[in-house]
Length: 122
Image 1 (cartoon, rainbow, N blue to C red):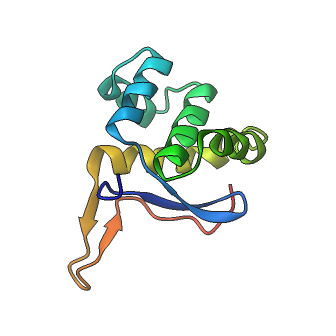
Image 2 (cartoon, rainbow, N blue to C red):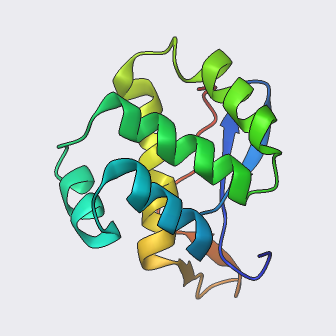
């Protein structure tokens, strides 16, 4: 699992890793009743349900190493009560890393995410 790219983001009370593994993509497809291609196409166009945001974040936390129960508690505490557009960039970053991976930083040779990390808590 650790060889897959992860999205790092400050969420709740700490910076955390978010990653969607192939198994978790299957679970996301099951939860949303749609394939990952159609799901991300809709999502990137801003056509999503609030439950979609929460599912992406929860599954991303699990893929990033959180226990499922802890991931659910984190989403309940730090995503559910927040405005939609405050948590959207987090879910978007998780999906962008899944779909596009990381890009190579030509100056330093380090991998960087395709979207920026946020300093703002979610």
